[in-house]
Each structure stands twice: as structure tokens, then as C-alpha cells.
Length: 358
Length: 251
Image (cartoon, rainbow over all chains, first blue to last red; front, top):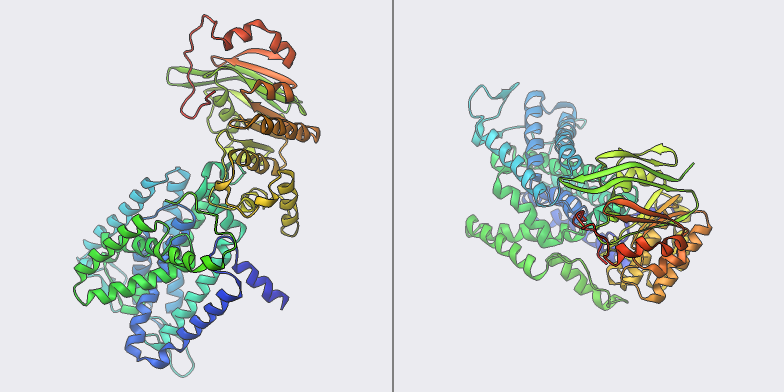
């Protein structure tokens, strides 16, 4: 019991909005609802819901880098794409037997993280910050898109895996759980739903622990005042790099799950539109909190999905309008503003504003 | 062995010779004030000591160790700490969290809460612990940052205009705080314009003028020095050619 309460104490802290028994009861109710959801739906719809879930990891990673760390990475899709392609190349070459798809998942995420470590080293140890960080990361993802788009020729192959240029790779095996009496292939259906939901809960809780740890303290300190943080004896470059790599790994996880879900990955997943969308989800939700990012991402994706029925170009315009409205009306995020509004009657110290709103 | 020693320190920004062959020695346990007119190079000297600027030539010794090429955070870890001129606090975070960030690696987790409470009481900020640091009064912000700097338990505390914008009462209280810290064995180097504060705390005073050490001695010697009075009153024949870089002090 003591260990359990200590565990719960680590999930809460100044860096996360939701706390107290009320929040966790609500959390369990939502989780129970999410677990029960497939019972009231069909496999196809549940499979489409997984599609929403796959993006959330990238959004949470961006929340960590941008919302908590204050560094706007415009190129999370680069890591998404790298991991997606890596998963495809690995599984097309080595197959899905003996649970190799999960090994491929780990390798693909690790490759994306390694790439981020390399890029991040030059960015943060070169003291690049602010808008330049956004420009460099965006450039990287656009260069990768261009590069992958010109790999149509037969010479562009790694082992048995053709890169296929603009059309992208396809027909890689989905994630497959080795099981006595027949492997379980996780097609977009109820089983994949539970696997991804489980990952989501683990990542969400893990990130809560991270941001409320001493590491998270230093992270928000760097966002607030990097010079002061350094003058307290912190090597801020290492903290920024660590955060960048974790965020990239999460984007990579999104990439692998997306690739496995649809059994394809194309260069456009690293393009301009794809790169901008995570910014919209995270900004609209409320980047400086994990929960509002999560809720915001699901909300925006649902709205986007609903609008796409009427034409995907309009949906993108609405995304842009949403971003502009957020920046103008609720710079800390719509869901974030809503959460604070709901919490206000329960707050004992309503006099405290939020300096540094921007 | 001196606590801090700069040997022939030079810093040029293009054609500007902002720090000109400065030899400064701080003995362990003293409160040393750095004064001088605007553009004298005080802030630049501070930044050189902290490692935010690297000197064009010369060396900096800290406790006998050559730290000339160390990064700022490495110098902090060797026992330096600084309070900036403009309060360098984490505005969107609570007062308590500000101190927690400063102290979390200096105390075991079990003792951290209690140590923060003690420091809050020392700073007279107990009632404000949950407020956002950005909502404090200017004087309270200054104190919070001094608290953060002190919480690292430094051997050498660097204060850049610690009383800027404070009322005379707050200035006096800050002076008493510095004396108390010094009585506990902390060496202090302060840039300060407020002569009342300098008189209150300083054991040694160095006057910088045009990037050079102009005079050095006890506070009484400096006050009695007519040349020092002259440069403050602008009667010196030398024109101020050395200007502070952006972010320099303003009287």
C-alpha cells in the first residue's frame, strides 16, 4: 500500500494539471470506458480508432519538447518517417515470425532516437534555439521527404525492401504476437486496439512521472529562463538533448504503429502538411500539459476526420483557422483554458494569474 | 590561497577594449564590492568570471584552480553562484518550485522539503510559497533569486546590483542578509551603485574605470580618494570610450 501511494505521488506534481482522487477516478472511468468501447462497436470502427491513437505518441513527445522544454521542433515527422521506413525495411527483410515485428519496433524506434541524438547534438551543443530550431528541424523533415520521393528506381532497395519513391513502401507485415497454436496478427481490429491502448497508458503515466521528477523540474526551468537554469549548475544542453531524443523516440513509435496499422508508409508522411499537423494538435490542446495535449489531439483528430468527409482541403483550412484562433484567444491551448475554467470554482487561489503567457 | 584571482584579464569586443588588464584578488571570507561609473566594464568582468564571456587573454583562478576555459555550469558546480541584475527567476513557476529547482540536487529527497521551508522563512517568503514567482513584488523577486543563489551553498557568491530597484529599507535588509551570509563564511563579490549598501557591507572595494582597475582598498580609503570622486563626477579628462555591451548596467 505504501509503495502504491508512493507511486501515485510520483505521478502528480506541479508540472501536471490533473491531481487528487477526483482526477484519478475520472481517469479510471475514462480508461474503463476505453476498455469497454470495443464491446459496443465493430472491428472496423475500432480499427479506425486505433488510427487516432497512433498519432498521440508523437503529440505527447512534442508536448514534452515544446510545451515543457520550450523548444519548438517542427520536424517530429522526420523521426516518424525514419522509424516507419525502418520498421518496413526490417520486417520485409526478416519477416514476422518469432515476434520479430516487436524487435523491429524497438530497432526502428532506436534508429529514430539515434538520428535525433545526432541532430540534437549539433542543435543544442551548437546553442541553436528559438525559431532557428524550428527552421532546422522543418528543413530536415522536408529534405527527408524529397529524398524518399526520388527513390522510385529499382536501385533503391535495402535487401528485399524496395523504397518505391513517391508511392512509398507497402505490404510489410503488421505487428504480430507469437502465440502457441498460431501467431496473433494485429490487423486494425480489437486486438491491436488493446495493445496500442496499453502502450498509450504506459507512455502517458511514464511521461507524467518524468515531468514531475527533478528532470522535469530542470526542463521547465530551461523553458522559463535558460541562463538561470545554467547558472544553477545544470548542463542545459544535456537536458535539452535528452528531451529531444525522448520526444523523437515517441514520434518514432507513432511512425511504427502507423506503418504497421496501414501496412504502408509514404514520403508525404514527412511533408509540410504532415509536419504542421502535430503543431496544431498540441497547440490547440495545450502544449504545456500532457493531459490537455492528449485530449486535444484526440479532439482535433476527430474534428479533422469528421471534416474530411466533406473534403480534405477544407479540413486543412479549418485546422489552420483553429490554430490561429488558439494563438489569438487561448495561447496556452483551448483544452488547457477549458480545464482551468472548470477547475476555477474549486481553486482556493484564483488571484494567481499566469505570467509569461505567450 | 585567494578565493578568486584574475590575472591580466583582457576582453575586447572588436575595437572596444572593455576589460583592460584587470588583476583582481578576492581573499576567502571577504565581502568585496566592485564599483565604477557606467561603462566601466563591471558587468563584463562579471560575465568573464562566470564564463558567459571568454577572455581575449589572461587567466581566472578559483580556489587556486585555473577555470579560464570552463563552461558556466562547471564553474557553478565548483562552488560559484550568481544573482543577476534583472531578477533571473522562473516566473511561471511557484516560489517553492523555484527553490526546489535550485536545491534538488544539493539535498537528499527526504530532507528537501524541510530545507526549502527553512530557506523560505529566511527569505521571509513563507506566506508566498505557492504564489507564482512572476507575481511577487520587485524586492521579493530579488530576494528569491538571492535565495536560489545562496541555496547552492557556494564558496563565492556573485551579486550583480543586488539592491537595484529596492527601497532603502529593503536595501538595508539585503545588506544585513549579505553580512549574515558572510559571517557564515561565504565570500561575496558584488557590483553595486548604492554607496550606502557598499558602506554597509564592503570590506574591500575595487573601482573600475574604462575597463581598468582605477583604485583598490578599504571603503574608507576609496571614499577619501579624490580621484575616485572625480571620475564619478565626470571631471576626468579621459573620455569614456569603453561602453558596456548590450545588457550592461544602468545607474
